Amino acid sequence: MKKVLYISYDGMTDPLGQSQVIPYLQGLSKLGYSITLLSAEKPERFAEGKEKIGKLLSSSDIEWVPIPYTSSPKVLSTVYDVWKLISNAKALHKKNNYSIVHCRSYIAAMAGISLKRNFGVKFLFDMRGFWADERIDGGIWNLGNPLFKRIYNYFKTKEKEYFTEADYTVSLTEAGKREIHTWKELKNAVPIQVIPCCADLGLFDYHTIDNAKLNEYKTRFGYTNNDLVITYLGSLGTWYMLDEMLRLFAKIKAKHANAKMLFITSDEAQMVYGKTAQYGLADTDIKVVKAARSEVPYYIALGQVSMFFVKQAYSKLASSPTKMGEIMGLGVPHICNAGVGDVKEITEDTQAGICLESFSDEELQRAADNLTELLAIPKEQIREGALKYYSLQKGIEKYASVYQKLLQQ
Image (cartoon, rainbow, N blue to C red; front, side):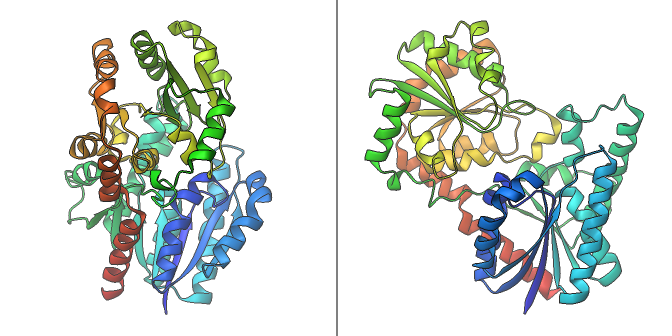
């Protein structure tokens, strides 16, 4: 039996775990891999979702070993969680004798590299981005603070160890892969497979949208067939640039009086409404809603265009926005920005939207002026682009290919 231990510091009761971990593992389980999933679960979400997620995983023959995520005190809580991950990983390996340890991001990799060093288990580093640099670029760690500077330097050292000792690495982007291969301190070639954040294109499929149900949502939100609805999906702040999106919406509104904007987010509505007047917008032109995963495709389908602007930073070379594949799967054109992973290359190759080079007034105006051309892009063309780059089945097959290479080493 091909036994794999998958370690994630993200919880399976978190939305990210449900969209970017479980679907892959379900597919790999169907291909004959015996999978144990070790994850750190936030207590409130775990209490609410453990039964549902437990049933979901057991129905796919995935053994789930959840441990509590510790949130405080800062730094020490993470050290404690790392100790728990390493201890549990070692105990599970002694019981199950894994062939592969598959680690999602840098914290989980601390447990994975321990298994490799102590037991010779094949180590797959699923990097998910330049994590330490993301903490700096996102303003989470301040290098002016000696403690955070030491932590940053520690993880940059660990990063080199992960790339050097991993039997295989997974990058979300070709841009990230190219960047790693320029690092002179990595003496040997690092074997890297690129697998972006794939989407469930069965769920995010405009062919399966029920028009009667869509009209119910339209009525609930007060939209008419004459409204031009622009959507945004996901969290606000840190990486996602609310002010720039509102600036663009204001320019669209100036050209299209019927324009409305729908923010689909779990963040507080006041984050948006607190800024509308600053950009000459009325609160009545904007709605902010929370959505269950099953509702998200319908909320996106209410819009004719979707936008997402991401902070341009070094660490974002390795980022793949999950929302991009989901939006494209629904045949909705998008407005995005360059400097984020492979976003520009994919947008241009699929001709699924507009990619701005900057957030200057001229670039934002260009997007507003070209909105009519965006609306004319055929839905099927956009969805074909999603199938080309973001197919979950293709992602599963790529992971299986890496597993096979590891088992043959």
